[in-house]
Length: 535
Image 1 (cartoon, rainbow, N blue to C red):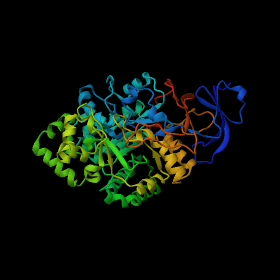
Image 2 (image 1 turned 90 degrees about the vertical axis):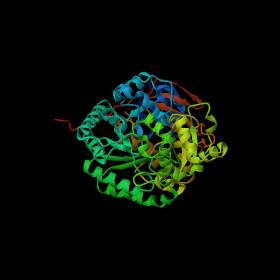
Image 3 (image 1 turned 180 degrees about the horizontal axis):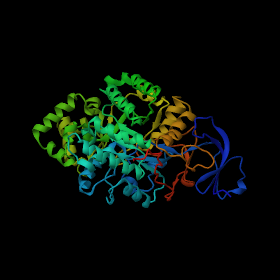
């Protein structure tokens, strides 16, 4: 007898194939049968009523690393149909984390991953994964090994090139992290301390990825002024390494750069024709979101958050920062230059005193306080000890749609969950299916479901996910294709979507209509590697 039977579904199986009518029988968390099945042989029945039944969505870029330790069921994620989150992004995740760096690392992550009241009692990736399992999450998690954490374990947060010996030790830490279950390596070349690394260091780490058949997931050093040059150097490096290159939140930033979109996609196509696997993830909005301190030039972060805050109190250094933020320089993009102060909106702060800034642009706050915009931004970072989030409007709709149409893409919400978040934290997947698939017909429903399910599962090595097929795990979303749409806005971002009627994780109902159930249904994945073993 089936534990759960889904009747009368319009099944989109995740492969890109056309939909078909059928029933799905689920037993012990797996899909036991697909076809015309007997309702008398089930303990529980869901009548899908010809709604779409698809594999659960895989969010390829998330910042739930700390929140998941405080909230085992993150409704903002699961109500989008997300059944798996990929943690450890941008090279600055939760683990590895040597105990002597906990305090400074908490401050470094505050504007990105929030400040939930959790116990920071892990050191390695394996420790961290065990802590998530102990917390019994209601949906699935996979973890990347962050480059910045690895660098910090070996050589701290100093702004200098790594020695050959230190690079070798980083390779060993990466191997340990992959052996413990990490599904790849992430880096963020605008973030401390990844921004201090030379290409030699990154190349050595990618050689390890090639050993394991694991991807490099990268926030590249430029997403605007030098995006083409940035892509060229990465593609050349990965051709030498032979590893999989995956671009995080692919986009083209800054009005002067929007015309480069076709060239960006052409570089991906050419690299793939040359035999290099290149993929990417994307969120469907014209604004990005990150910590406010990302507006500062890289040298300002040397030594960690405390040193950065000290520099903000030095008048001469402040003047240098503000000058460079206004003009940018070779090798570094200035977000404030791209967006303008009227295009940067504060989404979260730590103190009650500065709560009035949330939801306002830097320009609006400057008018209110009678100060220069740059001073407002720097003072806010200083006052809040780096615990400030922002939304930055740096993209155009035509570029977003063109990237969204490319078949090598996947979907990543990049959702920051603190304060008044970017609407992508609540609306990414329904927005794509409603606005861009149904209304604007950027691509077909079957193709987009493939890019939300089987394609990301393949990239991160989840062999039993992403496809509706007998014997595979029962991560399933049921939604109405005619009504699914996001509701979250920049003004009111904490709104759930419309059109998703059920979300099933490992055979257990987590979302059922308006109801959300906290169940220990999630798994923390470890990737099984076909490793070219050392020695």
